[in-house]
Length: 173
Image (tube, rainbow, N blue to C red):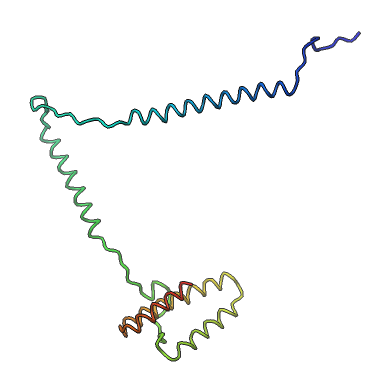
């Protein structure tokens, strides 16, 4: 006779086995949530503010002169650093060289400015590589910014400022 390796009357059912593991998993998750909640609540409980306590003069300790000097020097350095930060000014001037374009020869108030924009459009139309087209668009936008700035600097009228504002808005689109 062949002997069976399983004991008689013991069966391992897959469903019962999974239910037991699932129950144990839920228990572990529940315990982890409780531990997390305890530490979270503990942080709020222990983070209470404490009223300052006045120390009587007879208990106060005198700071040695060398330590006092070091504290004063550190405070002076902090004050100097803050003053330096206040002195720093941001350079908001834009030069044509910064944008890698030249000075504009035809400004937006010129009757030939339409021809300039037409030539830009043709050049963009015949640029088929998307990367080169993006570079060209960036260059044209930079040129328009410089043109607008030059128009305001040279003319300075309300009409020129309005025209320059429109050009910059169009360049942004």
